[in-house]
Length: 138
Ligand code: ZN
Image (cartoon, rainbow, N blue to C red):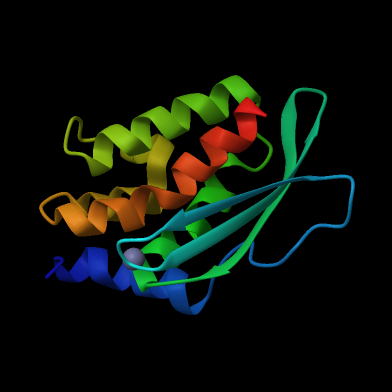
């Protein structure tokens, strides 16, 4: 389905998730659900001095949804809210096929571009990012 390199990167994040777990309070918790696949992603984040000082995820679902959440925690930890919003914007454009994304900024996330031809999978890949967007709007 996905090309091999992309598949390898996604499986690596799925099997060895970065940033998996929960934070102690004080924290912001945001739950996301993708009913079309049954994916659940719960983000715990802490914002200090305008930055995402820590972020973790937990939940369950398909490899793409969980790998995407793992990539998200790596990508936005330590970033300012404006930087995090910019990354969200780039990832959503990448996954929807509206842009190729910048490999320097996105790193492993470019592997999510592999889902763009599978509309059902796009929702799996974007779940964590929409959930973060909602958390930042709180
Ligand atoms: Zn899924």
